[in-house]
Length: 153
Image: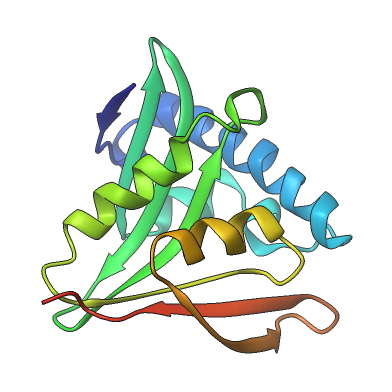
């Protein structure tokens, strides 16, 4: 697996590939939670490329198999998206991507949210030291679980 940190705003071909990965990955979450109104599933190429956070992608040869997106602040990191190609699940890709971001945290706390019914994602975050803080409806009818990992000294 090869990691890279591309910017979809500077490469339209990559943006199309990343959006395809995002849609197929979040379609799996939509099945798990029983609702297809997940914001990343509804995002278009313009919205994807307008987002100005950081990206890390995972490649298996020329195939994009995973990506993680996050915001950084002085005191915390907000993970916005974690996605893995349905054809590449159960290979440790999400865990490897998350581990890369954790390694860059420099003692900052990290927050993330996932569908409450997305047991594989909740389990992944728990395995990496995240603790559930509570559930919230966003939008109405879609429940997410917010998780936090304390800064590691």
